[in-house]
Length: 252
Image (cartoon, rainbow, N blue to C red; front, side, top):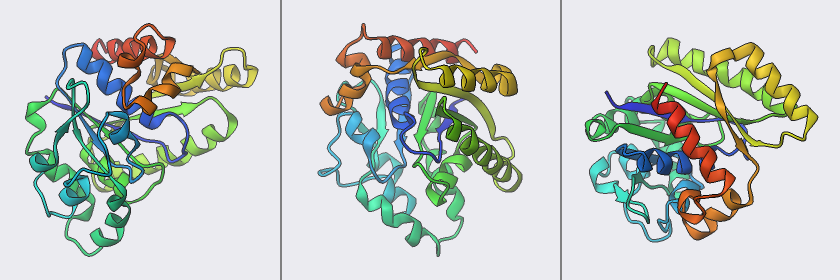
């Protein structure tokens, strides 16, 4: 069965899109059939996959509004290793336009059902907000990955997100669960980061991935080249960490 994973955190700048793009590339490098859905109006996952958001004609926006099929919006990233449902700034208006539509919370789920059988994993890069777009991602997914930095405010935001996931499970998607918490931009020299990491492991136990994503210059550089870090510098600590995360997920 296809595993559909929403990658979400309402706090911005936690490595959510970095994780979406690089996990997609790492799973694909492990021989998995991967689809990445860019559900963020900033379209960073689209650009990070080597697709120009300025020139694409059909995006996830058209799919959500019912103006195009999901097959028509599908493109292949630069390296040709995984497929992408791209986004651009048009998506920012989708929330307002979807309010009047029927089944507005499950339109992405319905669209993905048509092609889900073609993939082993579908990753959904959700926007950094608890809005209708994120709700579509959570309704379409079977599980949630939460990337987060090990800092105080991240713990506060995590509590809100966990409550949101519970509400979605109760009202829209009874099978939704938290797949895991991913520690990102981790600096082991930072005492606070170590303390927060310890708290996460204490409270969430096995829900915290063993793999830790470090702060890494190559990870920051790669989007500027329209590449996952795996194809920018495979030997970098960032690339190796995401390859390790892919292995951990595949062997879970």
